[in-house]
Length: 475
Image (cartoon, rainbow, N blue to C red):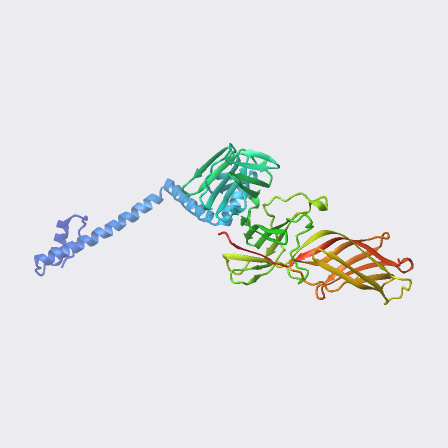
């Protein structure tokens, strides 16, 4: 049998039929079988031809130099976008080009911009204002904020401006503002720029909101802080008001700013020391489960609260602050509790103690000193003194009776002055275990005075009623 080959196209059914007849000329086939076979062959030939056409088109397209260039640009764009999706890479590129992007603001120059390093919340009992973004650059100051709790009626009263910024006792009124009543969100714009704005200022919002704000250069915003300011989270014990002013949560831990002020003109506060001298215990911070968080003062951030200038005299020592830092808990907490078990204040005293030491200055001998004075509600009693040796000096020592615990304050220290001239050494101490107060004077053995004459000028009273604060952590 002679084999016949024929070239045909996809739609040439007649050529297919002739080929089939040639192959199957030795036997007869049913018409239905023949038609089925023709359709199968036609389908296979069409698929093969389409595949070859696609491959040919793809090769022709990428053999074109223009198409190769377009494909290369597309690949570069995709890879660049993928790399920029990685935050550290994006920040590094932005700093290198001095270009940054802030949500709600747009593109800015990093070197000319100061920003809020996180958020600030001013939290009252029924209402709170959150500062979401602060941007200061040569074009001005923009503040994005919101309100939660009781709805904020953003209106001015008595002709006062809706909002203004206080900088070094100078007020800058708002230039433009918008307020979304439904979503309780707004924007404030001021004409102040990075050249006129310090790092810390106060934002005033009508009718009575005053929110301290601290900004940093945009190039230094590595650690995000959540700052919460509490205008009225205070407690009063024995005429002393202790307030939790601000709370900061960041990657280094929890940081608290405490403020104490005297409501009694006879009490002064030199420093705010939250260590109870009667127990030796400091402030304690507990999580929601009652677990203690460890105090850690290795890294304490600066608080946005503007600090007053140092006091020049004792009469104005009525308000002091201190900060505390604690290591972060192993897991996020919803509520925290701060316990301050003791606080010490200073009160003026004008009481004298006079004892005759006698002529016999033998080390180890006692001398009579029967005296009793009252400081606050505490009675300070002495019965005798003792002559001690202190290297080449003679020490005259008075030790009081144990000072009983009072209902409000316990005397834990005094300041005094010597009445017979200047002494090289003198001092006092309080024994926590025995609750006794010791007073001592030292002189050279050859020049020792024969009397113990002093005037107590100030007394230190420790408030034993604890202060306790519990608050929710802002998300």
